Length: 66
Image 1 (cartoon, helix red, strand yellow):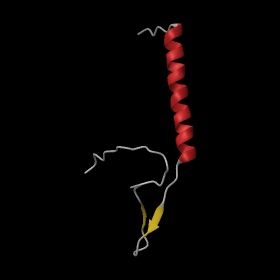
Image 2 (cartoon, one colour):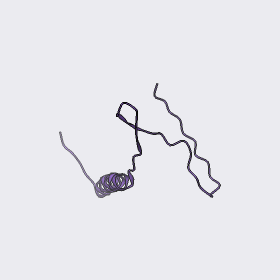
Image 3 (cartoon, rainbow, N blue to C red):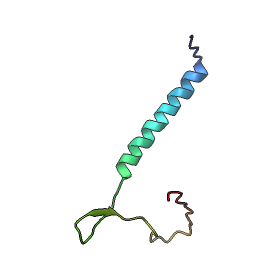
Image 4 (cartoon, rainbow, N blue to C red):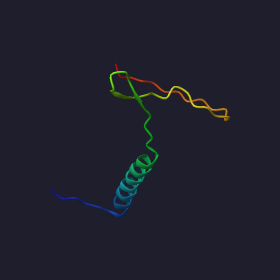
């Protein structure tokens, strides 16, 4: 089996890999988890229901997990 790479494919793969690396680095830096201790001492993460802001924006999300 032969792999043929031309300049366009190499640039496309490089940009794709670079974008994934940048996204991982950004996600790692903005990760903030809120933890609540229950009566039994277990820790649970709380979902975000609303955010206080003065901007007129709406976010639509769907949770498909049962």
